[in-house]
Length: 305
Ligand SMILES: Nc1ncnc2c1ncn2[C@@H]1O[C@H](COP(=O)(O)OP(=O)(O)OP(=O)(O)O)[C@@H](O)[C@H]1O
Ligand SMILES: [Mg+2]
Image 1 (tube, rainbow, N blue to C red):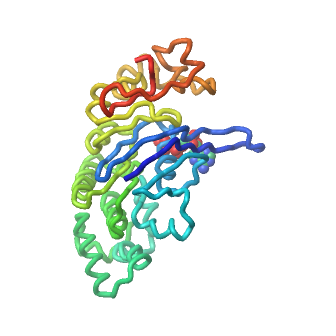
Image 2: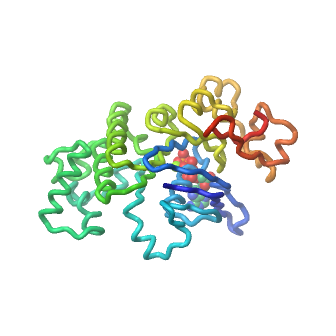
Image 3: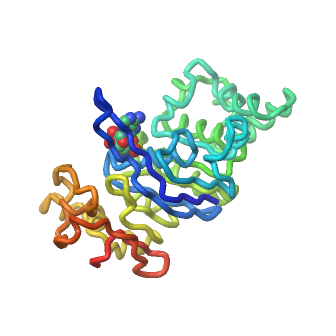
């Protein structure tokens, strides 16, 4: 469904544009239709940037994203626009995604009006259907976002996204602004909808428990790179990369400060994790590691393991 090839996004900043942040730095992976890939990693490692690149909400510095056989980079504006309904993004804060001056009914109807030609009664029917799908009641239709809870508003956001029958969804921390109990409800709803519509989902989160619950596979990101990728149980149960293991066992982190290491610049040719790595060898500072398949479908960005 999705093929990502050596994708890069470098942001330049500073007055003379001299500083460059390698937000995404040479990432490749495949996603099968119907799978959920969890993307984890500390704040600022480039998760949202990947999400936006996959939907081409952001121009890559280099590399390719192929969506259902279509190279997004080759598309003209109008062609890309036609593809938009098939790929959607959900953000952390439902309040920011909904227009506070629109009723719930109008919010859900908006994408349908924009993208699908529908008569009034058909539109009304479809809005009710979507409302039911995400577990809301007709009584919510004429309310405004401020009259709903955060969890209910996130359901409305899902209804808007589902309205267009998307194939691919990037969910960027979709539950992190919600209470734990509501989080679980939304995640369960997502699981059901995903199965029903065979959705392909990139699920971004820093919460490992949430990601474990929802993902078929997991990609662990560190400073613009995927350092480990594989089935959820392999990565979270039998992680190979020292960064993955530090993420998975938070107790150890506080003690050895593996994750609190400073962000000193890495030798451009070396491993990104070199400054923090307890197993680093001299050569790791000079040569960029390659992805190694340690078991079938389980990849690690380290050749010392
Ligand atoms: N438009 C931009 N211009 C310049 N730098 C940017 C821009 N967007 C992101 N960055 C930088 O790129 C890096 C990756 O940012 P990104 O938002 O992808 O991280 P993230 O993993 O989603 O973090 P978080 O978990 O905090 O949401 C950060 O260093 C960020 O400051
Ligand atoms: Mg982010």
